[in-house]
Image (cartoon, rainbow, N blue to C red; front, side, top):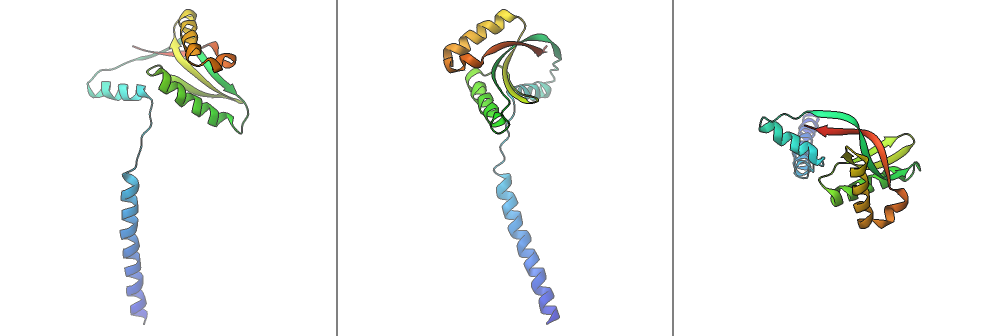
Length: 144
């Protein structure tokens, strides 16, 4: 009887491993990678042997969202970020948490005039954003 229980236990464990392997195989077939387009560019450049240098300096961005309502702000900021990325690719869109505010900002503009020009084109496309859209000074990224 003891030997039968041991054999039955071993068989159960083997069957569990077989099913677990099938589950993990199915899960690995559904992997979806979401990344900023800049990462793809940098990886492509690296594979070609091209090196880029990031320079940080004061510049301008266009802020399209800011909210400190903890229950909805993060989700709304994520939704706004995705919407702006789709609408204004390849411009970088930043989701920022500056406690207690969630913010969404677009672009790396060297001058305030460039940011104003972009803001004006954004508001033509999304007039509903008028009350929340500002030009802000920010640390921007320049890739050389």
